[in-house]
Amino acid sequence: MMTLIRKIQLKDKTQWQKLYRDYAKFYKVEMNKQILETVWSWLNNKKHEVSGIVYEVEGNIVALAHFRKMPRPLKGKYICFLDDLFVARKHRGKGIGEKLIAELKKISNSNGWNLIRWLTAYDNLKAKKLYDRVAKKTSWELYEL
Image (cartoon, rainbow, N blue to C red; front, side):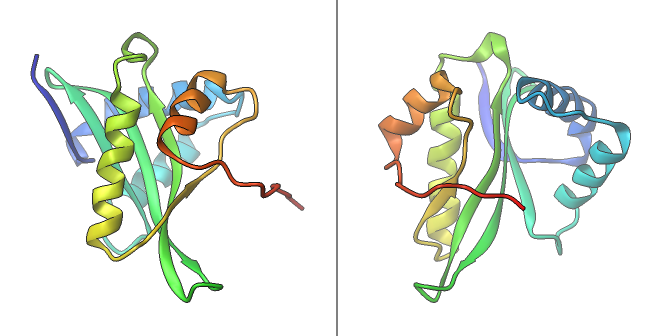
């Protein structure tokens, strides 16, 4: 089976939209065309801070990761912030999420970012099993205003 991790490309739009809609549905977040077009434009603008990689199986995108450079003032350095990580339902449990995180680690290291940070829902138990295996859970709490 031919698999590939690569940067998101313009040809991916239709498949990416399907995955991103499924991602929003998973988190019970309303998705619409305007949001899809905005995020898609960010991902394809080399000057925008949000970037994306995908996992491709036999020419079909089955997973995505969106990330960006983020300043970490207390260290005086930049880190990588993983905004979105999603694997299509029928491809879960095959190590794809872990492979995407490993690729982000390579990207992070090549950019001189010494850390990758991300959030997940407290009840995202399957993903948290992966995250607990590959990363250290912090004691920080998240607030929004």
